[in-house]
Amino acid sequence: MTDVAPREKEVDAMYTVASLYHFTHMKDLREKQKQLLSLCNSLEILGTLLLADEGLNGTISGPKEAIARVLDYLCEWPEIGDLQVKYSSSTDQSFKRMKVKIKKEIVTMGKPDVNVAKNAGQYVEPSEWNALISRNDVLVVDTRNTYEVGIGRFSNAIQPKTESFVDFPAWADDLLQQPERPKTVAMYCTGGIRCEKATAYMRELGFDEVYHLQGGILKYLEEIPEEESLWEGECFVFDGRVSLKHQLVEGSYELCYACQQPISTEESSSPLFEPGVSCPKCIDEVTDERKQRFRERHRQVLLSNERGEQHIGDLAMTKKRSLHKKKQD
Image (cartoon, rainbow, N blue to C red):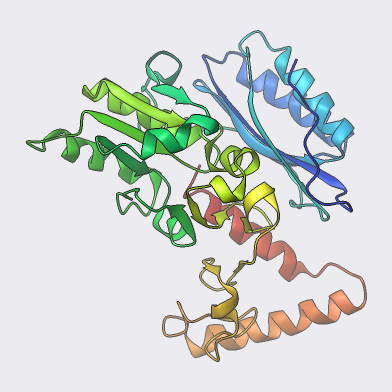
């Protein structure tokens, strides 16, 4: 049974957010999809869960007791031995609907035949991570995308300049050809799933000593006191909170509607930032026609909010965020 008692980070938190995954050999995907969606709907759970031959992945949000029931149900599946779960909390529902999808991969690297359950690298607990990545003989690799790395990272990590996780294998292939390739590699990502799959690919290439941060950045930020932390900045998350800080407190970033990039407080204070329209990163790329359309949409959203209603523009933003999330999935 999975521990489902998250440490509350905010007194007024109403929702528990559970990010979970498990690499295994999954069977009967259609039946599992149907039953899982029915259960989540009956408990008013929202979020996205992905099923594939290689396992399970997703994030769900709802009341703590309802989340516990879903996780207990998943742990009853014969293929699920021990779910990797990261908890946080939110005063608002982080998702707009519940989706259970069947995919070729639970995290898309373009390598569905990688045997993660068998070949993944060695887990490193957050309490042991600082010592590992402080060693001079360890190559620390951030397996996330460039826009995620831009708002927070471990300072001594390299980022392979990947715009999407599907770019990672090419980078690993190139590293293999280097005359002085690293003997020891330590990898990390947001919740642990991408770096776990990346370690399996690296080991199948021939890299023997490969480690990954168990539970990812989120688990590290939850467990490691800020005064002992080697993390710099905030951690991007693919839901309405946008970013999280130490102790998984909601961060300071928001998303630009036009380009879907995280916007800092400094950037949102810039005269080049127009809420719901464009930001300093994309102002020169968004046409005047689109800007005018976005202004009207934003005006309608504000009017709907004043009336206590949800505007279709808010739903459109959720859809855009979902499409943006595919860069991770």
